[in-house]
Amino acid sequence: MSRRSVRISDLLRDELSKLIATQLKDPRINGMLSITQVEVSPDLRSARAYVSVFGNPSEKKSALEGLGSSSGFLRRQLGQTLHFRRIPEIQFILDESMEQGNKLLSIIDNLKTENFSKPDLDK
Image (cartoon, rainbow, N blue to C red; front, side):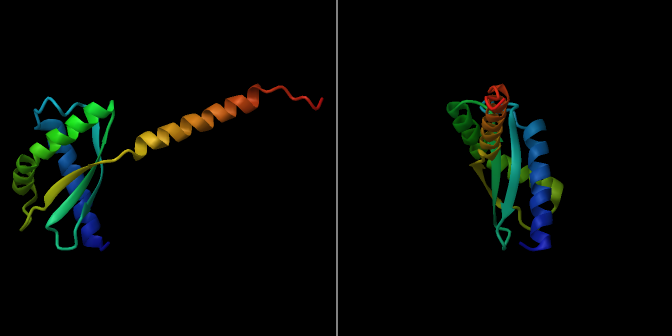
């Protein structure tokens, strides 16, 4: 990815996060949502926004539906703040990497406690 694409991706991620936190009033979108990454296409016509949502599967699905239905509003707001020639079409994708990382950390912690709790039989 070019430096320009990286800068635009970071800027879109920051602005989308601000807009979702401050201006969206959709009840399907709860407070436990974060934009983890944004990838823009080389021609800047489309963008994939990876979203981490904490909750059960139905809450995740409804949050993605809420974001999808508000994508037009978000594009208009981005157009007013960013002043790009073209604001990309935004596709929201569920990112479960944080939850998978938490699961791995808990497994590692369980293994550590099991190793420390076993008595040393060699003595």
